[in-house]
Amino acid sequence: MRVIIFGNHHRKEIAGYTIELVNSLHKRGCTDIIIEKIFAQYLQEWGCDISFASEIIEGIDFSADIAFTIGGDGTFIKSSAKIGKKEIPIIGINAGRLGFLADVHGEELDAAVDEVIKGNYTIEDRSLLRLCTDEKAYSDFNYALNEIAVLKQDSSAMITIHAWANGKFLNSYQADGLLVATSTGSTAYSMSVGGPIIVPQCRNFIIIPVAPHSLNVRPLIVPDDWEIELQVESRNNHFLIALDGRNNVFETNTKLKIKKASFSTRAIKRESNDFFNTLRGKLMWGVDNRKYTI
Figure 1 (cartoon, one colour):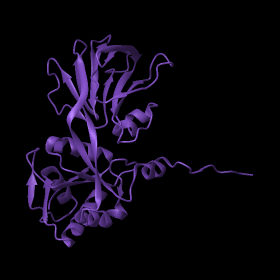
Figure 2 (tube, rainbow, N blue to C red; figure 1 turned 90 degrees about the vertical axis):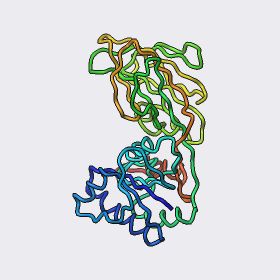
Figure 3 (cartoon, rainbow, N blue to C red; figure 1 turned 120 degrees about the vertical axis):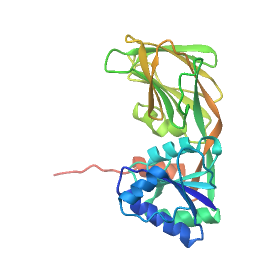
């Protein structure tokens, strides 16, 4: 089995988790391990011996049977962008705070590796969004696992976003922005601005305004095989596009088309770890933290 490890290289505790992961893989006979150059440099800065790496790579020219990410959901998402269309399944080790994608806790690492090596897991195919423009203005990886956000560029006046869904006019949103989110992204930015939580297996997109001028404008759920078109009006003639947080500034004459990607991100899930367990644990459903004084 050929393994690639991606890691957050801004937090010192990641080094310890990485060595633990490598030892766990070696213990089970898995020694073909590759890492990125930037991650190798990070590990060396923290005194780690990186001789375990059979290959150190740069860019996206690599192959592997499985990918481990060590960090939080942000690390998982960045890694999925690097994997792109390769369809390498990913398992996320959570060394962060709130993890819906990276949902294997550090103390479960060895058990999770054992299950992966034995094939005792399920794979969830997560839909991605694809951003298209007639001018091909977005030169970076134009896919998003969580959401595509259309936002005002600065703290000035609201923008107006004209939206069409499946070829029919939907609405002109006056707001700070508009999100188009996947079911995976329903527990990310979308949730923070009042969007619904959607089970990852649902094949839907969410259209949700950010700080709308009219309070009666509500989130809308649409099938994920619909194409969504957007056009923006802004006083400064520019607006911001963020694909899973990767930002670019566009001019207001840019027409946006958003649709489902032709490939998916393959997320590995432990058989003992389901979405509802994650919701209860991460959002503390049913927990009463109130303190009473007499």
